Amino acid sequence: MQRHKAKAGILSAIFMGLGQIYNRQFIKGLMFIAVEAVALIYFISNLGRAFWGMTTLGESPSRLEKVKGIAKMVPGDHSIVILIESLITLLFFVLFLIVWYMNIRDAYKIGAERENGRPSHTFKQSVRYILDYKFAQSFLLLPGMGILFFTIMPIIFMIMLAFTNYAAPNHIPPAKLVDWVGFETFRNLLVLKTWSHTFYGVLTWTIIWAVLSTITTYFGGMLVALLINQKGIRFKGMWRMLLIIPYAIPQMISLLLMRNLFNGQFGPINQYLGFFGLDGLPWLTDPFWAKVTVIVVNMWVGIPVSMLLIMGVLTTIPRDMYEAAEVDGATNYQKFRIVTLPMILFSTAPTLIMQFAGNINNFNAIFLLTGGNPVNGNYQYAGSTDLLVTWLYKLTLDQNKNNMASAIGIILFIIVAGFSLYNYRRTKSFQEEDMIQ
Image 1 (tube, one colour):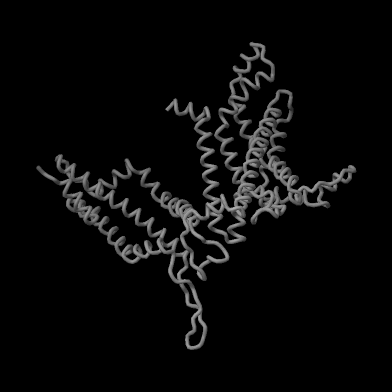
Image 2: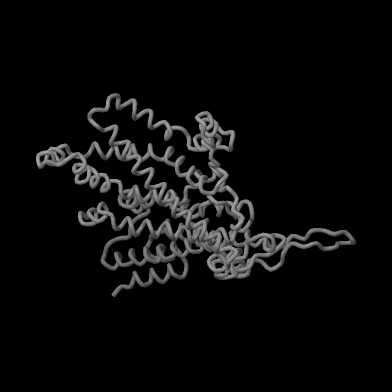
């Protein structure tokens, strides 16, 4: 009995491409051999250093040494550069292992076909098979590589930083080395009073902000959409155009303009209030009023988005449902509660969840309007209106507390991902889609 598949698989396991050559697929085999040859050259020089770097993060910091009586800076190991280079090398190694496995699988499969009396495919036939049946997978290979190295790798790098002591002033390379510290950063953030008071305070405001900003923009947009959709409203196109202007203007311009309008005692808003004999309010300088201001301004920016979405849903509701409700004697409120609202929620529930998740990470609204201020003396590097995402930004860019910022980023991801997945799976649109499939 022939054992082509076993021999081909073993040969490809020993060295990529040998199994293909054994199966008389010479061009494919030479290509696999070239891939392993290049990989061996690369990994012989870099794989050992990658494991060393991932384990130690460097051993000798930069230092001053006297050479012939002259002090010179001797460059040492840069822990972060070593970590990035090691991570890239290990990702390439994982990709190589995947290709190595595919090479064995391919040789084994072709060997099995030979045992069944079928001839091996020529290189031209293999290319034609890929174009006809595996085109989508082949076409997605390049963007998949881009996602791996430009999206997944930075995420892995950020997660790794959370388990180091990479923070100013004592552990900033190349003058100082960075070390692995395990879960100490998370413990400090959640338990140590210096950090935990700020974390829980900012987290509480982040949740309050996300809930209020989502509810106000969603139901505000629903109200506006229902009003415009009423029978007696004339010039509906004009109203749509006017109400979409806040969304059409770039958000940065709108927020910076609002920041000037609400700015201090001499801002335009307070001047208008003074004109009517009213005292101005500390819109951006008092913690409570600053929070009110960002929610109100976010309504101005966010209501048009919900309005457009809900107006589109309203056009899809069959008129027969309203006529049936009218025959049953339903009032306008009952028609809204029984027909309109369920249909809107059914279609927009996933978008509502997405808006909530987006508001948790709404960096622009806070940073451009208040910058996280007013200052809170009880917080560590955070202001009264800072969200977790803006606090993370300050810790990274302003304070070089990179390990703490990474830990906050991981916790933020867990909160957003957990909430979104749990609630999305509970929506009727998801459940009914599951039943249809």
